[in-house]
Length: 460
Image 1 (cartoon, rainbow, N blue to C red):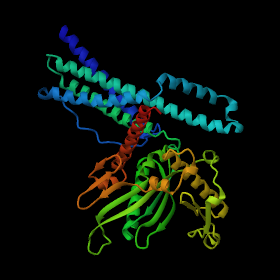
Image 2 (cartoon, rainbow, N blue to C red; image 1 turned 180 degrees about the vertical axis):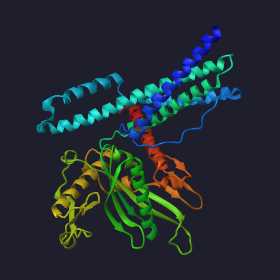
Image 3 (cartoon, helix red, strand yellow; image 1 turned 90 degrees about the horizontal axis):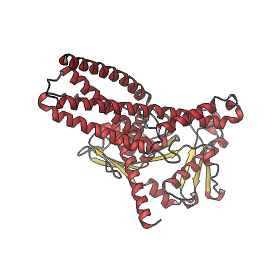
Image 4 (tube, one colour; image 1 turned 45 degrees about the vertical axis):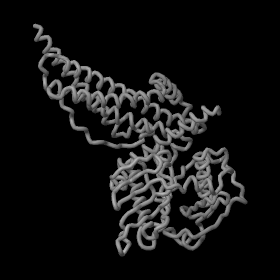
């Protein structure tokens, strides 16, 4: 009778494990394919990793296998706990979501006079709904992994002969739940690092050839491909706003508009000089050559964000040009393009998108204001009037990353010290580049925390 009870218990646990595994795998898969973008991640970020090989609990290696699972679960729960500490409690999120849904259910809420509030509430409902779903999934994955590990510990400590099928199912449950918890927690962790005032805005990437002639123009083309592919990898939309072709190959400059959740926050760390070392295909002697390209990243801000920025006319130098390209006589023969230079800082922006000079001037002015605001925020300046040429140089001119293809392969970030030998993976714009962005975000957070501690120690 006792053997019968034990066998029944094992069969029951096995059935429960199978049911729970199937249920939460379906839920996690749907959330991952939807992006899990609490902003992340995104944030991110529909990135999938190959499943780790199953850690099998053979009789001769049970302790080693259990140690590996404990380590995996500890890593996942550590990041999960850190995320929970920086996130409002689930009950508070549910309450806030209920209040917003109640407000939006009022018939007068959708009146045209209330359009500004409509946008805010709609975005908040979407954000809190996704966060609530994510937090519930985190808890489910953590509980499933913990319970499965406890059951494996019980099997390990038992003197009875193991049911191999039961052990394998429980092992799969533990490992799958822990890996998904780790992946989702890492994505959300990155999203919490994107909390700057303009991080949720779209952004413009301006790629400019530096020293190196034809080689530099080809390097801009390589960066153009890398960032376009990475934006697609992150499920952002990419649009070419402006381009200037090189004399032989590539581009002298390319301007991209990237839109999506926290686009500026994700790409802002790419601002600076990028250095390439390789055997140049444009060198007759096939010698190793070093070339540079500049990357500038600027948020695209709403009128509401820039309306308080006032730039005196005497600080502006405005010139016009022919736009060129398709668009008819007006575009090709009339100077509809506008270039505006901010004299104190040396910053210059141009716009040739519209057929009207007035519209191009307004767009260029908005871009200049957004760029000044972004630099002021980066350099922690109180006012844009404090921005001068040296500040711009410090913000833009730093060499941030080296891409070495000869005599060895290595990409290394000079700020976070993150490096990899997978040069092709980085230039393909996939997970390898994502790791560099994530490393920079974590490095920035650590740097800011250190500076804050130093100020507190100094009594400020």
